[in-house]
Amino acid sequence: MSEPLLVIGNGMAAAKLCEELTRRALGRHAVAVIGAEPHLAYNRVLLSEVLAGHMTAAEAEMKPATWWRERGVTLQYGTPAAAIDRAAREVILADGRRLPFGKLVLATGSHPIRLPLPGMDLPGVHTFRDLDDVEALLAAAAVPGTRAVVIGGGLLGIEAAAGLVGAGVETRLVHLQDRLMERQLDAAAGAFLKRAVEAKGIEVLLGAASEAIEGDTRVTGLRLKDGRVIPADILVVACGVIPNADLARAAGLEVKRGIVVDDTLASSDPDIFAIGECAEHRGMTYGLVAPAYEQAGVLARRLAGEDARYEGSVVSTNLKVSGVPVFSAGDVTGGPGTEDIVLTDRGLGVYRRLIVKDGVLAGAVLFGDTADGLFYLDLITRRTPIAAMRSELAFGRDAVAAAA
Image 1 (cartoon, rainbow, N blue to C red):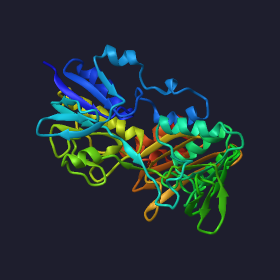
Image 2: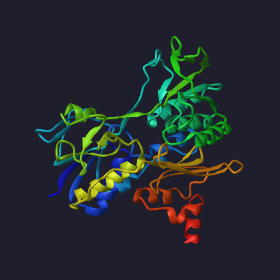
Image 3: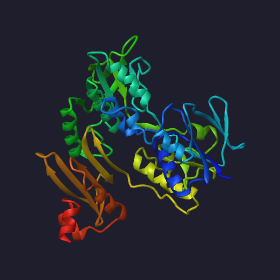
Image 4: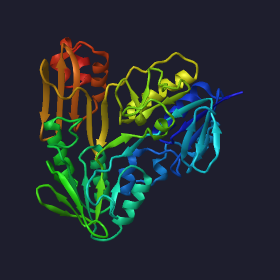
């Protein structure tokens, strides 16, 4: 008989795991997916497109309902898991039902960070994490003359601001740091991005520390520590996420920042695994899609009987931020012992910075033209010596190949 395999979490990591597992070992496990949201798994990266009206929620779905049925995956969504009974090897749902498991995968994602500011609980204050958030923002944006403030200049905040502008809302973006996406971009790329975001009609305020959310019965503005008050009818907090390890912690599994897993992606219970944003591997948690997909692929191979191991991911970001291609990978901070190879074309809005250390590529930051991003990522991952290609490296794969 097929071993019962439960997956808690119906997001991108869970969908990828099911795709890989059913491709490698269809029928080996009786797979059931438990999701708290009343939706099929969808691509969270596309939430801003849904908010802007460029696509529907249905178009953001990862797989149609028929795909899951054809592969024998049972979907239990709309009722969250409430607890894990490790002794009985059962998951208890919020409605009291108990589902048995032989193996359990936690793909519970993360919680949006809510800042400890006065007024955070006022009506009109939102996060930007799921389709419910998008629906609430769309309802608020439907009121003519609505003004929005987004706190957070990382990817999530920029996408929230872009979605609101697309929905016709006057929008300001407030960020504590001196540049946008400071974890992925250097100062020069951040400046390029700021100009691109402002060209979308978003006012960007950098170095702006939030002090309190104004309002009596609902939000009316954001007060900054320098005394300025920015009027707002909608305030979106998009300052990052923290791993959702609540179920694991309550079940007595080892949890630090996330659910601690080894190279097999097993938790402190060898029959319980964790992948995606909720997992902590070798002290690292990843808030990006690519590492979650790598983990899903490794775990699918293990569940199919292969001896696969996960050794960590080179952190990379390859995406369009408000329609502008941005890529970063590896160590983008530079510092002692590193050298920079820089290519800049302000007229075309193209910027490339390659960070070299000990004769290999250690990091890359691209803005405006990211076609060679995966080429650079491969060089970083493989630690390929670059001496023979150094003079052509900034011009990309084709230039390197032509010279060779």
